[in-house]
Length: 107
Image (spheres, rainbow, N blue to C red):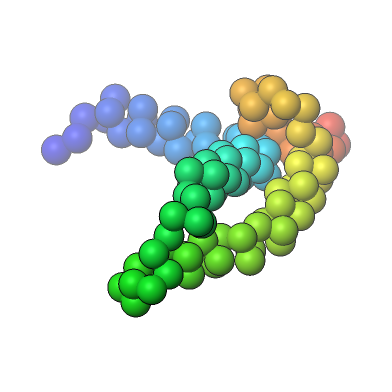
């Protein structure tokens, strides 16, 4: 059986997640994924792919990545704009979203 103190700590961790700016957190997560996608594409030399090998699906997989790259980049930019991203991840994620700050001021 879990101790009451352990349960309190678990609930405090969950509460802290709800107090974060989810839009900013998602923005930084997607930024990291875009960097991973770019790294993956940069390390693959298309001239060295064996296009005659029917089992090699590298080219098809890369096409999926670059086909969606523009829409992902646009979505990330929109998220960044709406979240007021400053470039300081810790500060941005810990800052409450605008609508929550307005609601707090009215209380």
